Structure formats: C-alpha cells, structure tokens
Length: 291
Ligand SMILES: NC(=O)c1ccc[n+]([C@@H]2O[C@H](COP(=O)([O-])OP(=O)(O)OC[C@H]3O[C@@H](n4cnc5c(N)ncnc54)[C@H](OP(=O)(O)O)[C@@H]3O)[C@@H](O)[C@H]2O)c1
Image 1 (cartoon, rainbow, N blue to C red):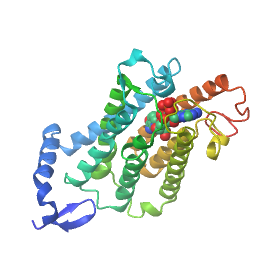
Image 2 (image 1 turned 90 degrees about the vertical axis):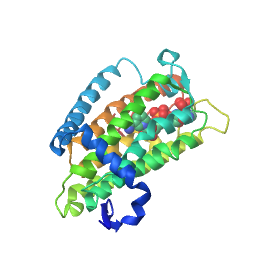
Image 3 (image 1 turned 90 degrees about the horizontal axis):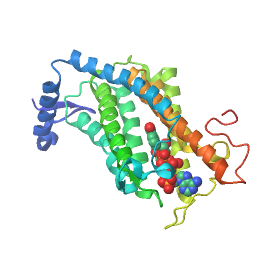
Image 4 (image 1 turned 60 degrees about the vertical axis):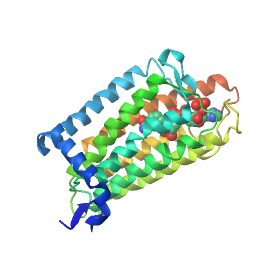
C-alpha cells in the first residue's frame, strides 16, 4: 500500500498522491475499454497489422499525389493552420499519451531495462525532434492545410498509444536483451538516425534568414549525398527502433515512416532538379550513391 510500482521501480507512494485519482481513472478507463489484457493485446496486434495496410495504401496513393504540406501545401485540403501551432499540436499526443501511460497506469513492464530504453528512445524523439523544440525553431515554414494537420494528429494518437502501451504493459524481452547484438545494433542505428535527422533539420533551417520563406540548395552533412537527408535520418531512426524493439508494433511504425518519407524524399529530389539548374547532379534522392 505504501509503495507503488511505476516505470522506474519502487517509488514512495506519497510522490504520487496528487496524481493518484488520475492514475486510477486511467486504469478504470482502460479496463472499461477492454474486457481483459488478452483482448487489449489482441487489439494492439490488430492496430499494428492495420498500420502495415495503411503504409501500403499510403505508399500507392503517394505515387499520384504528394503529401500536401510544406512546399506542396494546397487550399484544396482545408484552411491553413499556422505551421508552428500545427507541428506542436499534431505531435503532442505522441508525447502526452506515452507520459500518461508510463506515469498514470499500472504499467507492469516499465521497471524492466529494455522496455525503459525503448520508451526512452520514443520519448526522446518526440520531446526534441517534434513536439517541444522542433516546432518553435521553424523558419518561414508554409502553413499546414487542415486535412494534413488532422491526419497527423490522428496518427500520433494511434501510434503513441500503440507503441507505448505495448512497451509499458505487454512487451517481454529476455533478461539479457540489452546486450544482444540485435538490441545494440538497433539502438546504435536509432542514435545515428536521430542525430542525422536533427542535424539535417538544422541545415534546412539555417538556409533561411529570419523572415525569409524561399528555398535554397541545402549543403553539408548528409545533404552532400542525398536530397532527403532529414528523411533518411528519420527512416534510419525508426528502423533501429524496430530492430531493437523486435515487435510487429515497432516494425509497423518503421514501415509506415519509410512509405511516407521515401516518397517525400523522391518528390523533393525531383522538385530540386526542376527548380535549380545548378543542383548537384551526383546527389541521390534517399540512399547515398544508389537511389
Ligand atoms: N515519421 C513520419 O512519418 C514523418 C512524417 C513527416 C515528417 N517527418 C519529419 O518531420 C520533419 C519535417 O518534415 P517535412 O516534411 O516538413 O520536411 P521538409 O519538407 O524538408 O521541410 C522541413 C523545413 O525546412 C524548410 N525547408 C525545406 N527545404 C528547404 C530549402 N531547400 N530551403 C529552405 N527551407 C527549406 C521547410 O519549409 P517549408 O514549410 O516552407 O517547405 C520546413 O520548414 C523531418 O525531420 C521529417 O523526417 C516525419
């Protein structure tokens, strides 16, 4: 009664007193949604398989139409939402939902090191690269059409719940999983991808002086090799997460991200070649020296 199990082991109950009703409410809500853990796990698995289907559907759709935001934004997809507001709000569920699941539910697996590290990777990305820092650094970004904003928000609710509920409650790894070559390789790929993504986004941001909105040729870092360096970073990041996470859920997110961002990298590459006569001819779209 005096101590509760939370994500980081046994912590004095008194720390949780202010949050106790919320924690109970979250558990009651989840047990109202699902009649048993078996049923919830079944739903989480279905969500992962449905995400593979969404990835295939999105990949095919994007062969005919670019994702309509940024340079491809169009009023056809709804009224414009301020770009900083859009990024902050649409990505927020990927941060808030996981935090609620970690701190305010009886999360049985979060005292285990592999689960903690994987949740840490997910949260790290959404704190730095998407929700709390990235949106406020954007320079002169185009407004986001409402449909893109709403779809991104829905995706973040879906994926934030699926990834983190699985990791906090169901994912089981061998005791020595963090020293397994697959976990080490996956974590290293995640880190390389995360750094590449942050560095590339920084290069893009630095192309514009405050107040500018036009486009220039990105130079330096992985942009010397590919037009979609930020996308290559993000694809690598989630591929590493999937390798380390060894689940249908993490793999589905990786496949979905690849389907969306590979298309965006190709579209940007063609756009640069058409716009800039002096665009480096040796630069590829997404995979250095290959594609
Ligand atoms: N996991 C996923 O499924 C997913 C999906 C989408 C995005 N993302 C990530 O979110 C981040 C942003 O994505 P994005 O699609 O917005 O990337 P982007 O099209 O490359 O744009 C990123 C920012 O840089 C600006 N920019 C891009 N190219 C520029 C150039 N040549 N000159 C000057 N400014 C330039 C853009 O301005 P404008 O707005 O004016 O174009 C925008 O503010 C990326 O790191 C990406 O990996 C992840």
